[in-house]
Image 1 (cartoon, rainbow, N blue to C red):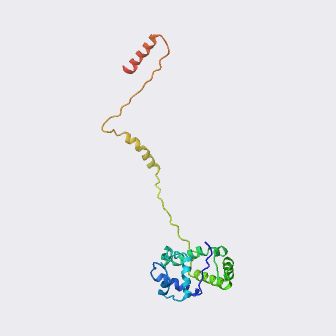
Image 2: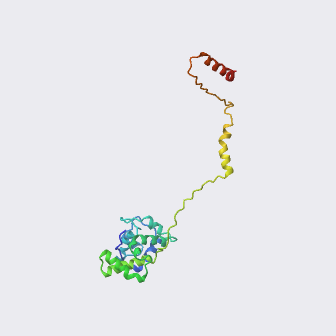
Image 3: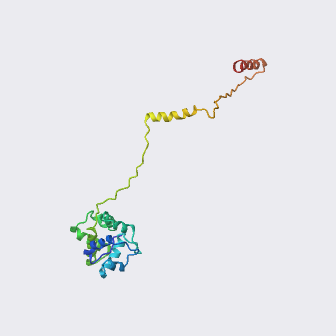
Length: 211
């Protein structure tokens, strides 16, 4: 994401502004009139709307996003803001993972070089960034949702029982019918013209198999 060029001259009121967002209901569209309704009627306050868009709190059309709604939960607001700031100002965190006031000149320089900005706008961009940083928890990492899969471990005794189960099923007669065995016997006769050889073979089969 490109480094935002948004800024406000009333950066000292950033904390108060986002506190108002938590206290009130989310509008269907965040307009200048809504800014006035929550107590920010100055023309300088209008810059809060593009800041909200840069942070992913509003769609380009001004509708509150899931991030806006999640931020209204005070128990996680600092974490939500931290994620938004790290996402929007990712280029700055490549320079300093934990920007401090002592890094102000470095941060201003980055805004100047990126946006070809003059000293005053670059200063206000930096101060807006630090105003947002003051209400953020940038060290928070959202807990990954662990997908727990239960695996059934079968012991040796259970495995034996499981393996023996098909055999026990085969031992149960179906509809009282006892199983029977059928044999298919193939006899390869020698190639001979002596009829007595064949007679002897069939006689032996009759005595041992049929008799």
